[in-house]
Amino acid sequence: MADEQKTLQQDSEFNELDLDGDGIVSDQEIKTLEAIEKRDKMDAQKKMAWVAMVSMLIFTALVFLPIFPDTRIKALADLFGLFYIGMASVCGAYMGMTAYMSKGK
Ligand SMILES: [Ca+2]
Image (cartoon, rainbow, N blue to C red; front, top):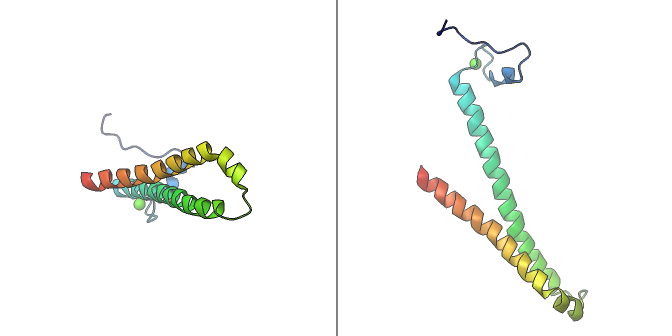
């Protein structure tokens, strides 16, 4: 029978999708979960962009402290450059992605 109604298996992990507890996992409830997951992903990416930006600032401030000898800073100069490029590209990618996604709506 093609129009047979589907049911969840016994103790399905998707039982908790029935948010209003009426015993039916509606399309709306599945869409709500997808929206929540999307938002969580966006939040995680936003956090990563912030950590990258803040770590660049903290790192810059740290390097100016006298506890780092000039010789060590000179030896690691190439590495520092890569660090800034890496962190800045995380921030840039996040901004580009959010701009692109808001344009799509
Ligand atoms: Ca329900």
